Image (cartoon, rainbow, N blue to C red):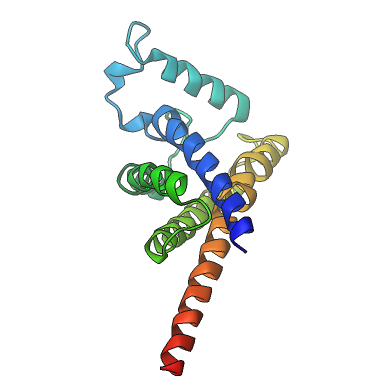
Length: 184
């Protein structure tokens, strides 16, 4: 089992290494002062151009400028990215690099909670995107958003796999502890 865990942990490490730049270059950008990234002379203007490209390519209404309605939960999710995803991602890179295939119970618990939170927030965004007006977001764009970007992130990317894996590891750890207790 540890061989499988080793490779899964390497997959998670790769995910977190990719996730960190995405946090800083996409997810957290609306929280930056606009003077740092919107004006063409600003030092982080490439983030504005990246955002424009993303919106033009995928028509993701979560990132579209007003008058696109942003659901009230999306601000909370952005805040969670800052106060939860960012610190856990930095921590996870270190933990997975050092302990690939041999995580302790505390690490498994943190990653289980991360997986559950990521699955729920991603599923919520997918549901909202599914409900977007087809006049604004075409069926083809929805397929790309739901099946490609958000769907792969939810199912294959990390959330469901990480959650199931950490749950199984913790269950095995707790079962072993219960057996040891009964033997004593």
